[in-house]
Length: 453
Ligand SMILES: Nc1ncnc2c1ncn2[C@@H]1O[C@H](COP(=O)(O)OP(=O)(O)OP(=O)(O)O)[C@@H](O)[C@H]1O
Ligand SMILES: [Mg+2]
Image (cartoon, rainbow, N blue to C red; front, side, top):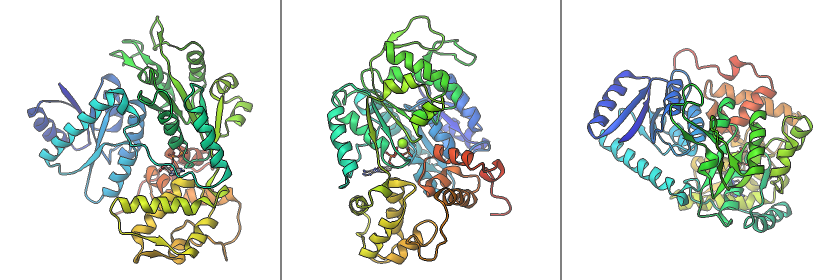
Protein backbone atom coordinates (compact mmCIF):
# COMPACT_ATOMS: atom_id res chain seq x y z
CA UNK A 1 0.00 0.00 0.00
CA UNK A 2 1.30 3.45 -0.93
CA UNK A 3 1.28 5.74 2.07
CA UNK A 4 1.19 9.50 1.87
CA UNK A 5 1.15 12.02 4.70
CA UNK A 6 -0.66 15.33 4.20
CA UNK A 7 0.52 18.13 6.49
CA UNK A 8 -1.76 21.13 6.05
CA UNK A 9 -3.80 23.26 8.41
CA UNK A 10 -6.79 23.49 6.05
CA UNK A 11 -9.24 20.82 7.18
CA UNK A 12 -11.17 20.88 3.91
CA UNK A 13 -8.07 20.33 1.84
CA UNK A 14 -7.03 17.41 4.03
CA UNK A 15 -10.45 15.85 3.77
CA UNK A 16 -10.79 16.25 0.01
CA UNK A 17 -7.28 15.03 -0.76
CA UNK A 18 -7.61 12.12 1.65
CA UNK A 19 -10.81 11.04 -0.06
CA UNK A 20 -9.54 11.43 -3.62
CA UNK A 21 -6.16 9.85 -3.00
CA UNK A 22 -7.86 7.10 -1.05
CA UNK A 23 -9.89 6.28 -4.16
CA UNK A 24 -6.75 5.71 -6.20
CA UNK A 25 -5.22 3.38 -3.67
CA UNK A 26 -3.31 5.55 -1.25
CA UNK A 27 -3.22 5.05 2.47
CA UNK A 28 -3.57 8.67 3.58
CA UNK A 29 -2.34 10.01 6.89
CA UNK A 30 -2.91 13.61 7.92
CA UNK A 31 -1.55 16.19 10.32
CA UNK A 32 -2.61 19.78 10.80
CA UNK A 33 0.72 21.22 11.82
CA UNK A 34 4.46 20.59 11.68
CA UNK A 35 4.70 18.99 15.12
CA UNK A 36 1.92 16.56 14.25
CA UNK A 37 3.54 15.72 10.92
CA UNK A 38 6.90 14.99 12.53
CA UNK A 39 5.21 12.77 15.10
CA UNK A 40 3.64 10.69 12.31
CA UNK A 41 6.99 10.37 10.51
CA UNK A 42 8.56 9.30 13.76
CA UNK A 43 6.01 6.59 14.32
CA UNK A 44 6.13 4.96 10.91
CA UNK A 45 7.88 4.74 7.61
CA UNK A 46 6.25 7.27 5.28
CA UNK A 47 7.52 7.40 1.70
CA UNK A 48 5.66 10.54 0.62
CA UNK A 49 4.78 13.80 2.31
CA UNK A 50 2.64 16.66 1.02
CA UNK A 51 3.82 19.63 3.05
CA UNK A 52 2.11 22.99 3.22
CA UNK A 53 4.45 25.99 3.01
CA UNK A 54 2.59 27.90 5.69
CA UNK A 55 1.83 25.94 8.81
CA UNK A 56 0.53 27.37 12.05
CA UNK A 57 3.51 26.33 14.18
CA UNK A 58 6.48 26.44 11.77
CA UNK A 59 7.10 27.41 8.19
CA UNK A 60 7.18 24.49 5.79
CA UNK A 61 10.59 25.69 4.61
CA UNK A 62 11.89 25.27 8.12
CA UNK A 63 10.44 21.78 8.63
CA UNK A 64 11.59 20.51 5.23
CA UNK A 65 15.33 20.41 6.08
CA UNK A 66 14.53 18.59 9.30
CA UNK A 67 12.49 15.98 7.44
CA UNK A 68 15.19 15.50 4.81
CA UNK A 69 17.85 15.27 7.51
CA UNK A 70 16.02 12.71 9.59
CA UNK A 71 14.37 10.69 6.84
CA UNK A 72 16.47 11.22 3.70
CA UNK A 73 14.49 8.66 1.74
CA UNK A 74 11.15 10.36 2.30
CA UNK A 75 10.11 12.43 -0.71
CA UNK A 76 8.45 15.74 0.04
CA UNK A 77 6.13 17.68 -2.26
CA UNK A 78 5.37 21.23 -1.17
CA UNK A 79 1.84 22.62 -1.29
CA UNK A 80 1.93 26.30 -2.08
CA UNK A 81 -0.53 29.14 -2.31
CA UNK A 82 -0.60 31.73 -5.04
CA UNK A 83 2.47 33.82 -5.60
CA UNK A 84 4.85 31.69 -3.63
CA UNK A 85 6.58 30.05 -6.56
CA UNK A 86 9.92 31.61 -5.59
CA UNK A 87 9.66 30.02 -2.16
CA UNK A 88 8.68 26.73 -3.74
CA UNK A 89 11.83 26.82 -5.83
CA UNK A 90 13.83 27.46 -2.70
CA UNK A 91 12.14 24.39 -1.23
CA UNK A 92 13.40 22.27 -4.13
CA UNK A 93 16.89 23.55 -3.42
CA UNK A 94 16.39 22.39 0.16
CA UNK A 95 15.51 18.90 -0.98
CA UNK A 96 11.80 18.89 -1.83
CA UNK A 97 10.94 16.70 -4.81
CA UNK A 98 8.59 19.25 -6.37
CA UNK A 99 5.70 21.54 -5.54
CA UNK A 100 2.00 21.75 -6.31
CA UNK A 101 0.00 24.94 -6.34
CA UNK A 102 -3.25 25.03 -4.42
CA UNK A 103 -5.99 24.35 -5.30
CA UNK A 104 -4.46 21.06 -6.40
CA UNK A 105 -5.11 19.58 -9.78
CA UNK A 106 -5.73 15.97 -8.82
CA UNK A 107 -4.41 14.38 -12.00
CA UNK A 108 -1.27 16.41 -11.79
CA UNK A 109 -0.82 15.62 -8.13
CA UNK A 110 -1.28 11.92 -8.70
CA UNK A 111 1.27 11.91 -11.49
CA UNK A 112 3.69 13.77 -9.25
CA UNK A 113 3.21 11.31 -6.41
CA UNK A 114 3.94 8.41 -8.73
CA UNK A 115 7.12 10.06 -9.98
CA UNK A 116 8.22 10.79 -6.43
CA UNK A 117 7.60 7.17 -5.48
CA UNK A 118 9.67 6.06 -8.43
CA UNK A 119 12.53 8.27 -7.36
CA UNK A 120 12.37 6.77 -3.91
CA UNK A 121 12.36 3.29 -5.35
CA UNK A 122 15.49 4.14 -7.31
CA UNK A 123 17.02 5.78 -4.27
CA UNK A 124 16.58 2.59 -2.33
CA UNK A 125 18.91 1.02 -4.85
CA UNK A 126 22.22 2.16 -3.62
CA UNK A 127 23.64 3.79 -6.72
CA UNK A 128 20.98 6.45 -6.93
CA UNK A 129 21.38 7.21 -3.26
CA UNK A 130 24.32 9.38 -4.17
CA UNK A 131 22.29 12.32 -3.08
CA UNK A 132 19.67 12.23 -5.78
CA UNK A 133 21.35 15.16 -7.47
CA UNK A 134 23.63 14.89 -10.42
CA UNK A 135 27.19 15.56 -9.66
CA UNK A 136 27.72 19.29 -9.93
CA UNK A 137 30.78 20.52 -11.78
CA UNK A 138 33.48 22.01 -9.59
CA UNK A 139 35.22 25.13 -10.83
CA UNK A 140 38.71 24.76 -9.41
CA UNK A 141 39.91 28.23 -10.37
CA UNK A 142 43.56 29.13 -10.44
CA UNK A 143 44.49 29.68 -6.82
CA UNK A 144 47.24 27.66 -5.18
CA UNK A 145 44.95 26.75 -2.30
CA UNK A 146 42.35 25.12 -4.51
CA UNK A 147 44.98 23.38 -6.64
CA UNK A 148 46.39 21.81 -3.48
CA UNK A 149 42.93 20.65 -2.45
CA UNK A 150 42.32 19.12 -5.84
CA UNK A 151 45.54 17.20 -5.70
CA UNK A 152 45.02 16.05 -2.09
CA UNK A 153 41.45 15.04 -2.90
CA UNK A 154 42.49 12.95 -5.87
CA UNK A 155 45.06 11.12 -3.77
CA UNK A 156 42.81 10.60 -0.75
CA UNK A 157 39.54 9.71 -2.47
CA UNK A 158 40.41 6.17 -3.61
CA UNK A 159 41.67 5.19 -0.14
CA UNK A 160 39.42 4.47 2.80
CA UNK A 161 40.97 7.26 4.92
CA UNK A 162 38.55 9.62 6.64
CA UNK A 163 38.40 13.09 5.12
CA UNK A 164 37.62 16.25 7.08
CA UNK A 165 36.55 19.26 5.07
CA UNK A 166 36.69 22.63 6.80
CA UNK A 167 35.86 26.09 5.51
CA UNK A 168 33.40 28.93 5.83
CA UNK A 169 29.78 28.60 4.84
CA UNK A 170 29.30 28.45 1.08
CA UNK A 171 32.88 27.51 0.18
CA UNK A 172 31.80 24.22 -1.38
CA UNK A 173 32.30 21.65 1.38
CA UNK A 174 29.38 19.48 0.32
CA UNK A 175 30.43 19.69 -3.31
CA UNK A 176 33.89 18.45 -2.36
CA UNK A 177 32.46 15.68 -0.16
CA UNK A 178 30.41 14.38 -3.07
CA UNK A 179 33.49 14.45 -5.26
CA UNK A 180 35.44 12.41 -2.71
CA UNK A 181 32.68 9.81 -2.88
CA UNK A 182 32.49 9.92 -6.68
CA UNK A 183 36.22 9.22 -6.95
CA UNK A 184 36.19 6.56 -4.25
CA UNK A 185 36.16 2.79 -4.58
CA UNK A 186 32.62 2.82 -3.21
CA UNK A 187 31.24 5.34 -5.73
CA UNK A 188 28.47 2.93 -6.72
CA UNK A 189 27.38 2.52 -3.12
CA UNK A 190 25.28 4.95 -1.09
CA UNK A 191 26.39 8.46 -0.19
CA UNK A 192 24.38 9.32 2.88
CA UNK A 193 24.29 12.84 4.25
CA UNK A 194 23.76 13.27 7.96
CA UNK A 195 23.16 16.91 8.67
CA UNK A 196 24.13 16.96 12.32
CA UNK A 197 22.92 20.55 12.68
CA UNK A 198 19.44 20.04 11.26
CA UNK A 199 18.44 17.17 13.54
CA UNK A 200 17.08 18.06 17.00
CA UNK A 201 19.87 17.11 19.46
CA UNK A 202 17.75 14.60 21.35
CA UNK A 203 17.13 12.66 18.11
CA UNK A 204 20.64 12.58 16.68
CA UNK A 205 21.56 9.25 18.24
CA UNK A 206 18.52 7.33 17.01
CA UNK A 207 18.77 8.99 13.58
CA UNK A 208 22.38 7.91 13.25
CA UNK A 209 22.20 4.47 14.80
CA UNK A 210 18.52 3.54 14.54
CA UNK A 211 16.42 2.03 17.27
CA UNK A 212 14.67 -1.18 18.17
CA UNK A 213 10.97 -1.43 18.63
CA UNK A 214 9.93 -0.14 22.03
CA UNK A 215 13.33 1.44 22.75
CA UNK A 216 11.56 4.58 23.94
CA UNK A 217 8.01 5.90 23.98
CA UNK A 218 6.90 6.40 20.42
CA UNK A 219 9.33 3.84 18.97
CA UNK A 220 6.61 1.58 17.61
CA UNK A 221 8.74 0.00 14.96
CA UNK A 222 12.36 -0.86 14.52
CA UNK A 223 14.18 1.78 12.50
CA UNK A 224 17.43 1.69 10.57
CA UNK A 225 19.91 4.42 11.40
CA UNK A 226 21.62 6.42 8.67
CA UNK A 227 24.93 4.73 9.48
CA UNK A 228 23.41 1.39 8.56
CA UNK A 229 21.81 2.88 5.45
CA UNK A 230 25.29 3.98 4.38
CA UNK A 231 26.77 0.49 4.86
CA UNK A 232 29.33 -0.18 2.16
CA UNK A 233 29.33 3.44 1.01
CA UNK A 234 30.16 6.90 2.31
CA UNK A 235 28.73 8.50 5.42
CA UNK A 236 28.89 12.29 5.14
CA UNK A 237 28.71 13.94 8.55
CA UNK A 238 27.80 17.51 7.71
CA UNK A 239 28.05 20.24 10.35
CA UNK A 240 30.14 17.92 12.48
CA UNK A 241 30.71 20.68 15.05
CA UNK A 242 27.02 20.46 15.98
CA UNK A 243 27.21 16.86 17.15
CA UNK A 244 25.97 16.66 20.76
CA UNK A 245 28.58 15.40 23.27
CA UNK A 246 26.69 12.17 24.11
CA UNK A 247 26.57 11.27 20.44
CA UNK A 248 30.25 12.10 19.97
CA UNK A 249 31.07 9.25 22.38
CA UNK A 250 28.82 6.83 20.50
CA UNK A 251 30.22 7.85 17.13
CA UNK A 252 33.74 7.32 18.42
CA UNK A 253 32.81 3.88 19.65
CA UNK A 254 31.38 3.05 16.22
CA UNK A 255 34.48 4.30 14.41
CA UNK A 256 36.70 2.20 16.65
CA UNK A 257 34.70 -1.00 16.48
CA UNK A 258 32.78 -0.78 13.22
CA UNK A 259 29.78 -1.90 15.21
CA UNK A 260 26.42 -0.18 15.34
CA UNK A 261 24.27 -0.55 18.40
CA UNK A 262 20.70 0.48 17.65
CA UNK A 263 19.10 2.32 20.55
CA UNK A 264 17.54 -0.34 22.75
CA UNK A 265 19.37 -3.22 21.04
CA UNK A 266 21.49 -5.84 22.75
CA UNK A 267 23.47 -7.15 19.81
CA UNK A 268 25.62 -4.85 17.66
CA UNK A 269 25.65 -5.02 13.86
CA UNK A 270 28.80 -4.85 11.76
CA UNK A 271 28.84 -1.86 9.39
CA UNK A 272 31.58 -0.60 7.09
CA UNK A 273 31.49 3.01 5.94
CA UNK A 274 33.92 5.55 4.56
CA UNK A 275 33.52 8.68 6.67
CA UNK A 276 33.71 12.20 5.30
CA UNK A 277 32.94 15.06 7.67
CA UNK A 278 32.54 18.81 7.19
CA UNK A 279 32.25 21.80 9.46
CA UNK A 280 32.32 25.55 9.25
CA UNK A 281 33.16 26.06 12.90
CA UNK A 282 36.75 26.23 14.11
CA UNK A 283 36.92 22.60 15.15
CA UNK A 284 40.38 22.89 16.71
CA UNK A 285 39.13 25.63 18.95
CA UNK A 286 36.05 23.57 19.79
CA UNK A 287 38.48 20.86 20.96
CA UNK A 288 40.43 23.35 23.05
CA UNK A 289 37.20 24.54 24.59
CA UNK A 290 36.15 20.93 25.27
CA UNK A 291 33.05 21.28 23.09
CA UNK A 292 34.36 18.59 20.74
CA UNK A 293 36.18 15.40 21.72
CA UNK A 294 39.80 15.34 20.77
CA UNK A 295 39.87 11.57 20.33
CA UNK A 296 36.95 11.77 17.91
CA UNK A 297 38.52 14.56 15.89
CA UNK A 298 41.69 12.50 15.74
CA UNK A 299 39.72 9.67 14.12
CA UNK A 300 38.12 11.89 11.50
CA UNK A 301 41.04 14.15 10.69
CA UNK A 302 43.34 11.90 8.68
CA UNK A 303 43.09 13.99 5.54
CA UNK A 304 42.10 17.60 6.10
CA UNK A 305 40.93 19.75 3.21
CA UNK A 306 40.71 23.41 4.16
CA UNK A 307 38.66 25.34 1.64
CA UNK A 308 39.79 28.96 1.31
CA UNK A 309 37.25 31.76 1.60
CA UNK A 310 36.39 33.35 -1.73
CA UNK A 311 37.78 36.74 -0.64
CA UNK A 312 41.18 35.04 -0.31
CA UNK A 313 41.11 33.94 -3.94
CA UNK A 314 39.55 36.91 -5.76
CA UNK A 315 41.21 35.71 -8.95
CA UNK A 316 38.69 32.86 -9.04
CA UNK A 317 35.69 35.19 -9.20
CA UNK A 318 35.95 35.61 -12.97
CA UNK A 319 36.12 31.89 -13.62
CA UNK A 320 33.27 31.13 -11.28
CA UNK A 321 31.10 33.82 -12.86
CA UNK A 322 31.94 32.49 -16.32
CA UNK A 323 30.97 29.00 -15.19
CA UNK A 324 27.68 30.17 -13.67
CA UNK A 325 26.85 32.16 -16.82
CA UNK A 326 27.42 29.07 -18.95
CA UNK A 327 25.21 27.02 -16.65
CA UNK A 328 22.44 29.61 -16.78
CA UNK A 329 22.64 29.75 -20.55
CA UNK A 330 22.52 25.98 -20.75
CA UNK A 331 19.31 26.17 -18.74
CA UNK A 332 17.84 28.32 -21.50
CA UNK A 333 18.33 31.78 -20.05
CA UNK A 334 19.26 34.60 -22.44
CA UNK A 335 23.03 35.00 -22.74
CA UNK A 336 24.64 37.61 -20.48
CA UNK A 337 28.14 38.94 -19.88
CA UNK A 338 29.67 41.21 -17.27
CA UNK A 339 31.54 44.41 -18.13
CA UNK A 340 35.20 44.52 -16.98
CA UNK A 341 34.29 47.15 -14.35
CA UNK A 342 31.44 44.97 -13.11
CA UNK A 343 33.89 42.10 -12.66
CA UNK A 344 36.27 44.46 -10.82
CA UNK A 345 33.46 45.28 -8.40
CA UNK A 346 32.71 41.60 -7.87
CA UNK A 347 36.37 40.88 -7.21
CA UNK A 348 36.57 43.71 -4.65
CA UNK A 349 33.59 42.49 -2.67
CA UNK A 350 34.40 40.44 0.49
CA UNK A 351 31.81 37.65 -0.19
CA UNK A 352 30.80 36.71 3.35
CA UNK A 353 28.58 33.99 1.85
CA UNK A 354 31.43 32.80 -0.42
CA UNK A 355 30.70 30.89 -3.64
CA UNK A 356 27.07 30.29 -2.72
CA UNK A 357 26.55 34.04 -2.54
CA UNK A 358 28.43 34.65 -5.78
CA UNK A 359 26.26 32.09 -7.54
CA UNK A 360 23.09 33.74 -6.20
CA UNK A 361 24.27 37.25 -7.11
CA UNK A 362 25.25 36.19 -10.63
CA UNK A 363 21.88 34.60 -11.20
CA UNK A 364 20.03 37.59 -9.76
CA UNK A 365 21.96 40.02 -11.95
CA UNK A 366 21.32 37.94 -15.05
CA UNK A 367 17.60 37.89 -14.40
CA UNK A 368 17.34 41.58 -13.62
CA UNK A 369 19.69 42.93 -16.26
CA UNK A 370 17.96 44.78 -19.10
CA UNK A 371 20.51 44.14 -21.81
CA UNK A 372 23.10 41.48 -22.60
CA UNK A 373 25.80 43.24 -20.56
CA UNK A 374 25.66 43.65 -16.80
CA UNK A 375 27.33 46.92 -15.83
CA UNK A 376 29.15 48.07 -12.72
CA UNK A 377 26.23 50.14 -11.44
CA UNK A 378 23.90 47.19 -11.54
CA UNK A 379 26.44 45.13 -9.65
CA UNK A 380 26.95 47.77 -6.99
CA UNK A 381 23.24 48.22 -6.53
CA UNK A 382 22.76 44.47 -6.04
CA UNK A 383 25.61 43.72 -3.70
CA UNK A 384 24.67 43.98 -0.07
CA UNK A 385 25.25 47.27 1.62
CA UNK A 386 24.83 49.12 -1.68
CA UNK A 387 28.18 50.25 -3.01
CA UNK A 388 30.64 47.44 -2.75
CA UNK A 389 33.69 49.25 -3.97
CA UNK A 390 33.67 51.33 -0.82
CA UNK A 391 33.89 54.95 -1.82
CA UNK A 392 31.94 56.82 0.80
CA UNK A 393 30.92 53.84 2.89
CA UNK A 394 32.09 54.37 6.47
CA UNK A 395 34.45 51.70 7.69
CA UNK A 396 33.17 49.37 10.39
CA UNK A 397 34.41 46.03 11.62
CA UNK A 398 33.46 42.93 9.68
CA UNK A 399 31.66 41.62 12.75
CA UNK A 400 29.64 44.81 13.01
CA UNK A 401 28.79 44.70 9.32
CA UNK A 402 27.78 41.09 9.69
CA UNK A 403 25.48 41.83 12.58
CA UNK A 404 23.85 44.69 10.69
CA UNK A 405 23.27 42.48 7.68
CA UNK A 406 21.78 39.69 9.77
CA UNK A 407 19.41 42.12 11.48
CA UNK A 408 18.51 43.72 8.18
CA UNK A 409 17.67 40.38 6.61
CA UNK A 410 15.54 39.35 9.60
CA UNK A 411 13.65 42.61 9.37
CA UNK A 412 13.14 42.26 5.68
CA UNK A 413 11.83 38.71 5.95
CA UNK A 414 9.84 38.73 9.18
CA UNK A 415 9.17 35.24 10.45
CA UNK A 416 10.88 33.66 7.45
CA UNK A 417 14.37 32.66 8.52
CA UNK A 418 15.00 30.42 5.50
CA UNK A 419 14.45 33.42 3.23
CA UNK A 420 16.68 35.58 5.42
CA UNK A 421 19.42 32.93 5.35
CA UNK A 422 19.08 32.70 1.58
CA UNK A 423 19.59 36.39 0.87
CA UNK A 424 22.56 36.33 3.20
CA UNK A 425 23.95 33.38 1.31
CA UNK A 426 24.37 31.31 4.48
CA UNK A 427 22.76 28.12 5.70
CA UNK A 428 19.81 28.23 8.05
CA UNK A 429 21.97 26.67 10.72
CA UNK A 430 24.59 29.40 10.34
CA UNK A 431 21.85 32.02 10.61
CA UNK A 432 20.71 30.49 13.90
CA UNK A 433 24.29 30.53 15.14
CA UNK A 434 24.65 34.18 14.22
CA UNK A 435 21.37 35.08 15.92
CA UNK A 436 22.77 33.44 19.02
CA UNK A 437 26.21 35.01 18.68
CA UNK A 438 24.86 38.52 18.15
CA UNK A 439 22.32 37.98 20.92
CA UNK A 440 19.50 39.05 18.66
CA UNK A 441 16.34 38.80 20.71
CA UNK A 442 13.72 36.23 19.91
CA UNK A 443 11.12 38.89 19.19
CA UNK A 444 13.23 40.30 16.38
CA UNK A 445 14.44 36.94 15.14
CA UNK A 446 11.02 35.36 14.85
CA UNK A 447 8.81 38.39 14.46
CA UNK A 448 5.89 37.75 12.19
CA UNK A 449 4.66 40.29 9.73
CA UNK A 450 1.91 42.23 11.47
CA UNK A 451 -0.85 44.42 10.13
CA UNK A 452 -2.44 44.05 6.74
CA UNK A 453 -0.43 42.59 3.91
N1 LIG B 1 34.34 25.48 -6.69
C1 LIG B 1 33.03 25.59 -6.96
N2 LIG B 1 32.61 25.49 -8.23
C2 LIG B 1 31.29 25.60 -8.53
N3 LIG B 1 30.32 25.81 -7.62
C3 LIG B 1 30.69 25.92 -6.34
C4 LIG B 1 32.06 25.82 -5.94
N4 LIG B 1 32.12 25.97 -4.60
C5 LIG B 1 30.85 26.14 -4.18
N5 LIG B 1 29.99 26.13 -5.21
C6 LIG B 1 28.54 26.31 -5.13
O1 LIG B 1 28.25 27.07 -3.97
C7 LIG B 1 27.10 26.57 -3.30
C8 LIG B 1 27.46 26.17 -1.90
O2 LIG B 1 28.26 25.01 -1.90
P1 LIG B 1 28.18 23.94 -0.72
O3 LIG B 1 26.78 23.64 -0.38
O4 LIG B 1 29.06 22.80 -1.09
O5 LIG B 1 28.84 24.81 0.45
P2 LIG B 1 29.13 24.44 1.98
O6 LIG B 1 30.56 24.75 2.21
O7 LIG B 1 28.68 23.06 2.25
O8 LIG B 1 28.24 25.52 2.75
P3 LIG B 1 27.57 25.41 4.22
O9 LIG B 1 28.69 25.46 5.23
O10 LIG B 1 26.73 26.66 4.29
O11 LIG B 1 26.79 24.16 4.26
C9 LIG B 1 26.59 25.41 -4.15
O12 LIG B 1 25.60 25.90 -5.02
C10 LIG B 1 27.82 24.98 -4.92
O13 LIG B 1 27.46 24.41 -6.13
MG1 LIG C 1 27.16 22.36 3.50
